[in-house]
Structures are given as structure tokens and as C-alpha cells.
Image (cartoon, rainbow, N blue to C red; front, top):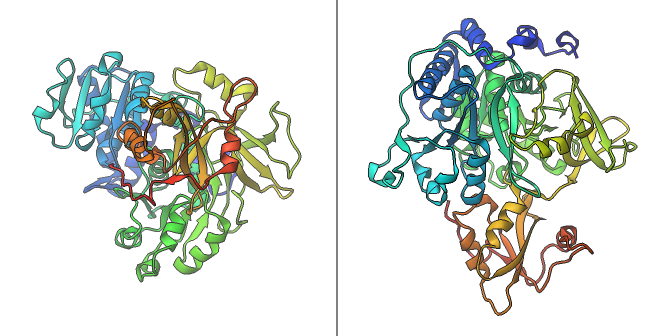
Length: 540
């Protein structure tokens, strides 16, 4: 797809193919928009000119401590400007950033750091306790930077690693000669039947994320893009690049708050916002307030919102909800638009991409029949290039030269795509992908547990809840609460099972594989223990 063939993609024409990189975009937009505000978060307020300087100076900082082109820098923190500061510095210097899920703990966090081979770990002072469970002798970490204040005594155990407060940015350095296909960042997406995979996102992928999503939302110069979503995920990073590419401003909240959502939009002057499926019924569950109509928001990117909530939300708040499909590995492949919405569907294929619905052998199935969604892009490096240090997983996902999404989808005769479910054993809760494998690995470490099967069940909020079926060892005893408490601190809090059921055995195939579809189909039973009903509160 040539840029001129797609209405609304005007920013694309301003960047020739070789200039679709972080340094080039920052440089040109700094010259074009100067002191216009670009990024607002946690007390920080950057102009376009500031952002370019911040990138150049943090690249200088990284170079001063021996970080070289291609090295990885991991970042474990919430929505703080330091996260983006380091990511832009990495992008400027040809270094690879690795923003980690702020809730990652234990087995998952160890794997991400080991797989990425990160040399530096920048960690929020509030999350330093997460490092206690790590085996640093098996990691490549040479230096730990603390974001925020922490007593030195709390870090006394790290005798073989340089531990210091996150330094101030250094002197500006020239940008590295990076190309659009060079690796910009590694984003870990939870494994479905195995370990979490590091998605290799090239520079041009985020250029195209910004172009396509900005087109869908009608982003224009002067817009205020307000997001409560985490900066370590594709959605909020995409939002930043939308602002950067279109001359808008991104405002980042510390976290999503049901009661504080509308007042925050009013205060920021937001014109565009971002939600995930479960957030909409949560907002609608609150009593109406004046703030729901006092804002300036015209549209929200809100994938996965059930059809029955969409009309009510728009009628009550005046905000149009737009669905779509885009995974960390892909881009905005399927989208709905303000003038063309079909509730219950994700929308239609975005120009610049090809998509098929296929069977297990990659043969295309007829419209109206469910199959796996596979995709590819017309533009070079518009989608991820593979999984970091996992060649076999890359080959599996990109087989036959198509990216296999792992999602079961139906395309109707009019070209609208409807999501059915996930092909593999993933769970999605509160906008987070959860690996059942990783939860199971923690549970089976409990001395009383013989077997564990983790799977999704439906919740009241039109999303998944985590359920675990547990087989105890002969003669062993353990309560459901004990097992849940055992999970705390060893995994992300949102991955800790809500439902637990003790069972005598697990359904299996002839070759011994657990048939989780049978567990999912059965769902909750009379013997199922509910953490929320039991009043068990998790520590975060």
C-alpha cells in the first residue's frame, strides 16, 4: 500500500521509508512542533524539543556506562516518565529497551531477564522487593538503577552488582545510524502453553502503529490523547507515537481508576482516550456523574467491549467506542471507524494488510466459518520480526510466511471480523495476558500439590477469570487459601487464581495431555472455591 492510496495517512508521506525510526521522527517533529507539549506524566511535562534532547542525553548516559549498540536495558516500573526517558534513550543510541510488566515476579521475571540478556535493570524503588527472589548469578545484569528513593541498607545484598540511583541524563550524543528494521524494543507477551516470549519490535513497527491507529481515531494536531493504560504495553506506547507523529499531546495516568477516570479526562482536556473491554462495564457500574458529560473526549479506542455495552456507553457519556484487532506481534490489522461500526465485530481489514482465516493446515476456510486469523503486512517492518532468542517459536508463529495470531475468528460475507476465542491456552484478565503454564509452574512447587491445571472461566465483567484445578499428593493437605497465598509474590497479582477446586484427577488424552477444554466447558461447580467470596485480599 502506498501512503498516498490511503486517506488520512498524511503523516506517512512526511517520512521516507528509511526515516521511519525513533531518532528521525523525534528530530523532525522537534523542528516542526518545538515547544508544543508532547508528553505529560507524573509531574513531568515534555515539549517536542525536550523529547529529542531527552533521547540524546539518555543515549549519552547509557554510552557513559559502557552500554553498546544492540545491548539490552530492562526497565521494571509503572507509569513514570523515567520509563519513557530510558526507552527513547535506547532508541536514539541503537540500544534495545526491555520494558517489563510492573507486576512480573518470580519465575516469570527471572525468565524475562535471562532471555533478554539485559545488562542493566532499572527498577522502581517500590518494586525492589521483587528482586529478592531472583538468581542474579544466572543473569547478565551488571548494574541496577533505582528509580526513586530507597535506603542504601535495603540494597546491601547486591554486593557483586553496581547498585545506584538512576543517574541524571548525560551529554547529548549523535543518533545511532539505525534503520527501520533495527530492533527498537522487546515486549514480553505471556506465553500460552509455555514461557513468555519476547516480541522483537523494530523501529518502523511503532511508526506504523501510530499511522494506522491515528487514522482510525482521527488523531490530529492539538489533540490530547489521555491513557490510563500501562506504558510497558503496546497500547500506551502506541499512544505516545500517535501523539508524536500527529502533533498531539499524550497524558499518562498513574493507573486506571474507576472513580477518577472522568475527572482526570476533564482536567487534562482530553479529546481521545483508551480503554480495554472490562473497563467499560466497570465504568457503567458507577452512578452517573456530571464529569461523564463535562469532558471533551470524542472517541475511545476500546477493543473487546461486548456489543451490549457499546450503545449504552455512548449514550451516557457521548464517547464513541471503536473496536479493533492488534497484537504485540502485529499492528492495527482490523479496525472499526466512527462512520462504520458493527457492534459485536472488530471491524474490517485495514488497508496495507492481508488476512486469512485458516484451518489447522493453513487452508483458508469459507466466510462464516471459524478458524485461526493469520496476517501479513504490505509495508516492511510494520509487524514484529520474531521472538527474541526463540528461533523455534518464531518459525512456528511465522510459518508459511504469515503471522499466526493464535486467535479464532470468523469473517462474515461483508468483510467484518468477529473474535471467537483464543486458539491456545491463554487467559486474559484486566487487559493482561496470563500464561496458564507459568501459573501452573508456581502451583506445582507447593509441597502438597501433585498436579495443577489452570484455565479461564467467565467473569461478571465480560472477560476471563483464572481458575485452577488441583490434585493433591496422596495423604497431603492444603486449603484453597493456602495455595492462593503461596502464589503471592511469585507471579503477577492479576495472575493469582480467583477460583480453586480440589479434584481427584484431571481429564487426559490417550497420550497423557490434559484436556483443558473439558475443564473450561465444565466451568464453576458446587465445590469451586471463590477467593473474592471468601474475602481473601491479595497483596500487590
